[in-house]
Amino acid sequence: MDPNNQVPQAPLEQQPAPQLPPQPAPSPAQPPQYDYKHNPLAVMQSGEQTVCEIKRHPFGLFSMYASMGFGLLALAVVIIIAPHYISALTGNTQMLLLLAYLIVVAATLLFAYIATTIYKNNRWILTTDSLTQVTQIGLFRKQVSQLSLANLEDVTAQQDGVIQSMFNFGTLHAETAGERSKFVFPFCPDPNAYARQVLACREAYIRNDPEGAERANDLLEVPRYNNNNSQ
Image (cartoon, rainbow, N blue to C red; front, side, top):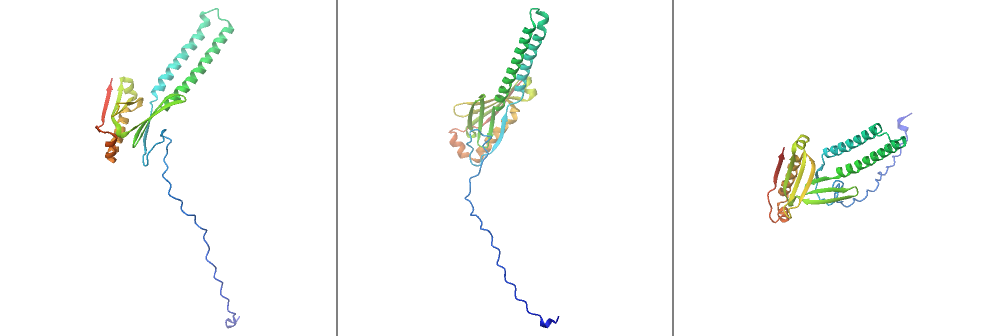
């Protein structure tokens, strides 16, 4: 085919530029969301962070379980040996004793579950601004108190006896500067370390907001850390 006789090609139609879908207008800035699940009062301030959550040492549960287990074992021994010493016990009486024992076991397990739930729900929640004490009084009843770090005056870690020193638990006291009220937390694991951590948060709070701390306390005292460790 003669290249001189080629029919000129019509120019290709210019394709329109693809249309992008309209972008939604940016939503107004939302306030930051904070996780309130660790603070039952749900009054955390903007920028406040949870430092730690102090729960009770498991030794308190161990002593309770040991007492219950010993009582159930002693009762079982009595029921087993009773027919050998009391000839008047008939077969029906022995069955009634066994049934009564099973009822006692079920009631003990229920009591252990309730006591364990109450025991584990007692805790302290330390944030960068406050200290919250959760006291579980009953299965459906609890008391929550909150103390600003500006009002914290004294923190005391107390360990009494060989058992507490061996298993490293004790009682933690936090005292306010106003009405001399106290937060008391028994069976605290490693109370000396937690006492130092509470005071460190207190000192950081004062450094970050010294004027607010002075407003909270008309007379600001330097916090003291006492370690009462008696064997």
